[in-house]
Amino acid sequence: MVVYISYSRQSVGAAFKLGEALDRLQVKTWLDLRELSTGADWNEKVAEAIHSADAFVFLIGPPGPYDRLQQFEWQQVVEEEYYLDSTKALIPVVIGQAEIPGFLSARKQIAVDASTIDFEAIASVIAEWIGRPEDTIDPVRLERGRRARDLALKNLREYSLELKQEDAKRAGVRGLK
Amino acid sequence: MGASYEKSVFINCPFDSTFEPLFHAIVLTVAARGFKPRCARETEGRAETRISRIARGILEAKYSIHDLSRYQGEGADNLSRFNMPLELGIALGIQYLGDIEQRTSGNKHIWVALVPANSLDRKFISDLGGYDHRGHDQQPVNVIKAVASWLSLQPDSLLKPSPRAIFEAYPGFCKLLAQARAEALGDLTWPTITDAAEAVIATMPL
Image 1 (cartoon, each protein chain N blue to C red):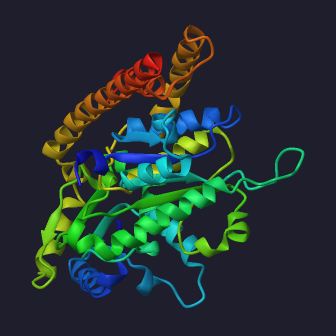
Image 2 (cartoon, each protein chain N blue to C red):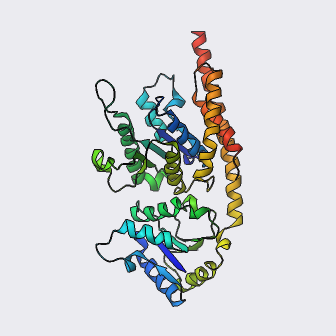
Image 3 (cartoon, one colour):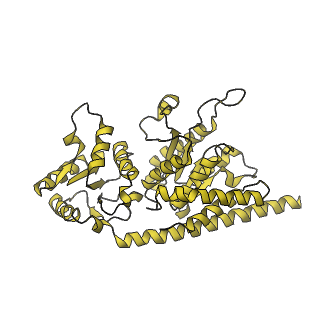
């Protein structure tokens, strides 16, 4: 089993430490800076590694500027639709107050404070969860997503109604003229 | 900024009949992922100038989608359209302003450019290098995939439906729109489109 580690470039140190902690637990990891040599086609190699990975850890945050490389990694996972696959463990490790991308919204999260990250403890949790991928789906978050769709449909209905009322109002004013 | 802002996606694309199937594919995908699709058509008929209506629409939305796939000259004068890049420029301005003001206002703007699948955007709008645009080949299925995959990366997106499920629902959406157009003797208003999207999405499995 290979665990792909995706990280924001602001948390490269954390990614290395987490990779080492997982190695100590005999969990094989793939981290671009360790695996790729200078001059390698990063996009191509990363896409291949994501395609062949069995599980994923996403180090998200701390909040910062647009990170093209991490966006590329996320995009590969999304395009393969792994986020809809309950046999793939997808584990977000949220550093600080970072926002979770929608495709990870139904997964159990590990929340950490940037100043006090216990890599050994996080690695232990990850090692346990990757053996039971279906358990990385959080039923409470999944249910919250279902309710969010109902709310979105209600909002869309109200929006359409508002537009029709505005159209009718404008047509009435024109009629008076 | 309220919930409406967080959930609004402004769609900036051609509104002609050739592009219409792709516009409808974008609208359905945006709505299916729990967002409120918005565009310049929602304020048609108002006295305000078109560019002002578009700028306000982008400002009122956290997200915007800009289709740059029509980059070649068209018509007898072989003119290319400048409207889409102009309006993407407005979105970029709002994004940078938001980056500066974020700590106080909480405002933020996130955009994506839909570009031709042949990667020619790297030549005709090379200053946007460093951003991951989404390519498509003018086919609704690939527009749905491009938009759904981009939305999946955003924190306000629903997890489902999958791009496949949206594409499977797309013919039903087109059928509803065709019926509505026939009933209105050729006129298809923006609220009719959003109504049809809501009706189709409500029947999609979770």
